[in-house]
Length: 418
Image (tube, rainbow, N blue to C red; front, side, top):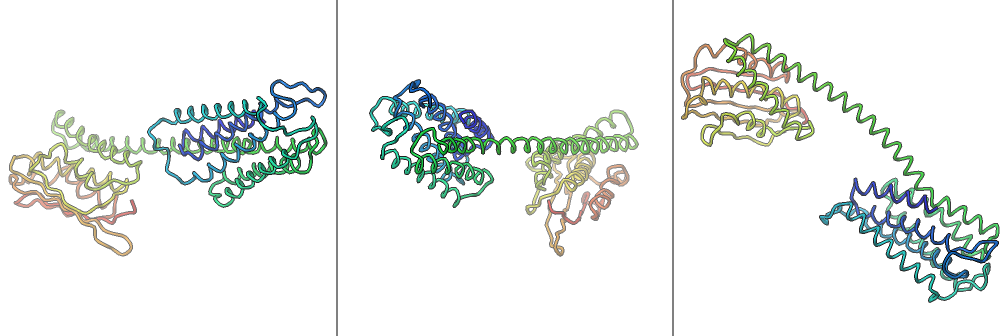
């Protein structure tokens, strides 16, 4: 039982290191108590064929150790049940320090109670090696009542699978307490040995559950790892395909190697910026204002960019598509438009409009104060991407106009649930 209880404590402490809740720490401390007292009780218990004991007196020390054993464990369970639902460890100390302090306290309390049980200050609990005093029956009835209180409290607050199996552990102790404490006052009888069998089951039940749960968690972890690898493989292939497309298309529209390198680097950096935003949110959603700021960051100053809009969250597909379009708009503005001269300004605004059960995003890009728009800017890989990518990938519309005041672009597409 000592080994089973201490191994159970180890599994619970590992769980605490991953999910630092003081309830788990209290329960692990209870199993450390149980394991230590099980060992001490065995060492102090007189043999059925010899009266010698390794320490303490041969009449009452082992019984007092058993009483302390069966008192500290249900008290720990009670503390565990009352501590559940409280916030995670917020003391600022590391989990290893918390675990070390808990084990040290448990060892000191165990040592102190063992000293009290063996020095002879407590009243005797046995007349002879096999016959107990009436006090022993009262004390062990109290122990059984304390275990019943712990069981009742767990039943009232059973929130997790661990709670339910801990109830099984406490229920497994009851036959041992009933047989060994109330109805059988003689050691080494058949009922006395049967009670010890129940005690062995109680000490091992939760360990079996934790071992089984660990194996299941390991299998789920392996399955999750395989899924992550498959997802990573898919995303890497997708990114490489996008890079290949960007390189090919940029090469077709470049007039020199220098122009090609500059353009392709800018498009890859734009993809990287969108990837960073998605990675920070675990590929769930990206705020539109963060995306606009990231794409305009290489060209923006305190005066040349104005951004306004409501809070909108984009899905991964929407983020990647809109990032490419914004990059092309920003690049064209930096080469030929409002961002190419000091007095120019770019205004980016958007709104979210209801559309049945979904919503539509309307984004407007307006350039002001820039030089006259060159006609050659109206036909290139960048402008083709601006006009065609949103309709193709997001089912939206794009109105791109090269007017005297500068480039205006109105983008609409239905928003998905980000």
